[in-house]
Length: 490
Image 1: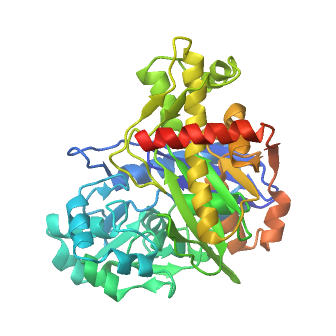
Image 2: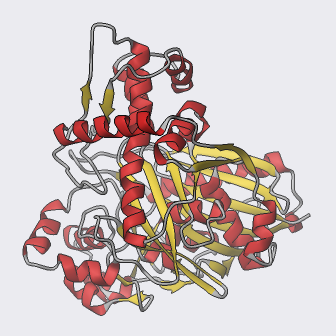
């Protein structure tokens, strides 16, 4: 029996899964690490604390799995995207805290670049919008504010997204590389040429000397050396950013296939095939993956608030003590009683892009109860996704057939049924909701020959439940009209 280790390095912690070639979960580990907030709007991680969370979670998973060293066929990595790490090539020591994807310290620089008229060209080359979210302005900020630019130009420093930093550590410092999906989130990667862009590097002030090699998402990046609990020589054979990994982990292999990850926010990706699709609806164009014989692109749209709205009801309003209780509360009423909740607590993302928008509740009456508000909150999460997916259909010219779902809130049956009803499509929920880690395992297994093809992966991917539209269409259309009116007021 061959086993694959999947390292899922997230924003607040690291999960490690050990899976066998029949996709049975043999071991699981999880370790959190600290968030650092040096100033308002700034978010940092200590790369050494990230690494400690990886080795800690790995130790837990291997203890559960009880594998002999020769039973590990490959390791896969998936990671929080855009988060930026710089370290010394010679020692491997980080030279600054990682700047996290959520960090907004380079907002002014991004605004200046937009005002100078660079937005269209940057989007044409990279598929992205100029925003502090992405890596390029973070790299330049560290080099300039930590006095490291000269060292970077001399080739003494290495830059990477988190996958690249972990790969360097897993291989004992032998490999400095990333995959195409993570490279496509930096703002300095040419989507069509699949190479670093000298034009974009110059615009953002990122020295070519710090960049990792870019490789396909499946294939041997390097082999382990000095990794506790794992024999030397195990190939690290798969890497992808977390949302692309979830798309792969959901076996969304055909153009038009789409997935939604219900986490703190909702992250939706649609496979658009071998040619990048430019969005006219405010969506992002990104590399989905590159595997032997295939390159796939995706359209991406995100709603900033999904599970966080449930946390607000729990922590801010005290409606219940655990997030899982919302389903019973919301199901205790037959509908939301005309109440609409727009969970725009941090603005509206794609396709609206209204950062000034704020959360809104409409339709309150004397008969409104906690249950109505709970149900309307779940409905608001699903209705945001309708806006994003309709934009994807317009941009791609493809009608959505089935939406695959994962993440914590995907376990909520009421939310999934309502999502099916308002979209008018079937919702497919997998047996293993941790599809981000599953995607890393699939890519590593593909890269190391555990699975020989995507067809072999389809055979082991298993659906747990399918939700089909059941609601009256006229009632849904009326609900959508109330939603559109509420969004306009938010």
